[in-house]
Length: 232
Image (cartoon, rainbow, N blue to C red; front, side):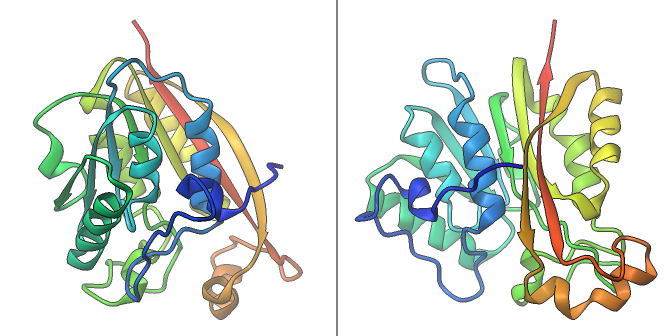
């Protein structure tokens, strides 16, 4: 279990403001867990970093503070505008693009790819076309975007490039590990944390139990960060 640090750890200090307007996924425990993994990652000078599903851009900013050349992508117009504004307020050069996962940023290879995508199992098989649930609903098993990232991110990694991907234990981390290994990457779980069920999971307990994803008495969600590296 990881000790999750305060959210201000992501912003470079309590005085730094990161805007998080309604409709944009606010930094939460999964963001902090992914930032913890980012902190210990050894980045080369002027590393090329891609942040997929950037939301407010807080992880992109954390990478930019380390001197990386950062590209951030989100499908939400509001998230793109928010990430651009947060980068401007922080005085950091982050390229923020709108589009489907990594598609608009496939013009180069990356030393590090970060992603905190939607991963919560939902009753609907497709992603919501709009609204706040688009930031977390991810199909019947929570893998609507995870499977695509496992397929589409590895070809964008440079030699010895690394993917850091955070998601719920409800969304089959073993499948993530298996897909990334099949893609030729060395993959393992590097961070874990446990949090109480939030409003979204509490509202769909019956569905999750019916899918066999939680027990009747379960009240905590496991979060994991999976690290996958391209090796020679």
